[in-house]
Image (cartoon, rainbow, N blue to C red; front, side, top):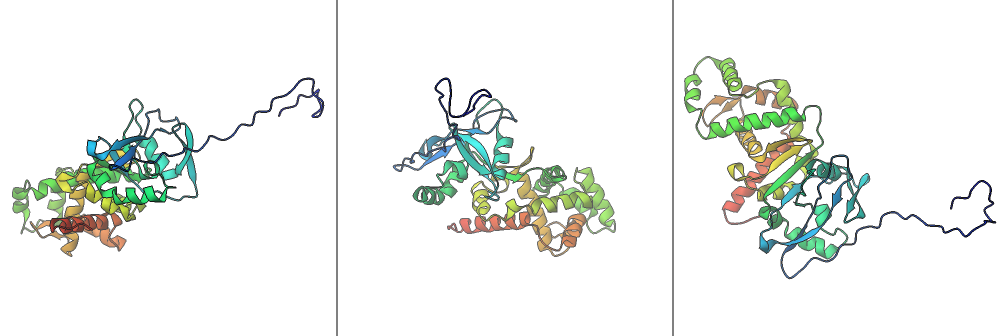
Length: 317
C-alpha cells in the first residue's frame, strides 16, 4: 500500500483497496493419454530478445507427427532462468534456455520434443513411462538437434573443420581420391605433398585449427550418457538425419560421423598412416598425441558404432 505524503497510515480520507501482486503461477501439467504412446511438443515463435514462450501440445506417436528432438546437457540445477509455459512461470537451466533461444524462429513455431518440458518431471510414473519410450521418441523424430552449448572463441572454427574434413572423409571412403592416393603412395614426397593435397581439397592441416576440434570434442555434451541413445536413434553416417549446433553455427551430423570414422581408423592404426589406403594424415595425430587423451567426442562416436554393431546382431542395449 502506498500512502501519500499528507496522510498518516492510520487515518485516510477514503477507502484503499490493496492489491497484492503475486508471482506468475506455475504451470500445472495435465496427465498424458495412456491408451496410446503420446508425447508433448513445444516452442513458440518470437524475436531474439523476447522471453521464451512455449505451449505444450499432445501428439500420438501412432499418427506419425512431425517434430524434432533436442539432445543437450541439462547443466547445473542451481542457476535457473524463467520462461513462459502456457503463460505460466516455468524455470529451466541456463543451457536449455540458451538452446531454446537459438533454436526459436522469429516467424514460425518450431515443433520440438524437450525432455525437461515435455515430461512432467514431478510425476514419477509419467517420467518412468516416457523414459522407457525415449529411444522410440528420438527414432520417430524428423531429426535430432544436438545442442553443444554457447559458442566459444574457436567453436566456429571447429564446426567449419568438421564440415570440410567430413566431406573429404566421405569422398575418401567412397573411393573418389583413390587415383590421387595411388600417385603419392610409396613415394618419398612425405607429409609435404600430402599436406598440399589436403589443403587443395579444402582441408586445413593447421595445428591451431585441429586443436579447436579437440577442444570442441571435449565439451561436456559428449560425456553425457543419455547422448548415446539419442544419437544412435538418429542413424549413422549417410543415414543420420541430425544437425549439430553450437551457438548459431550449424553442421550436419553426417559430417561429424565421417570425420570421426577417419580419425578413429587412424588412431586404431597406432600411427599417422590410414591403413585402409595408406593415406597419411600426419597433423591430426600430432596435435592429438600432444593432448594425451582421446577427446570425448571421438569416444562417443566409437560407442555409437558399438551400439550399431550390437543392433545388427539382433539386440539393442
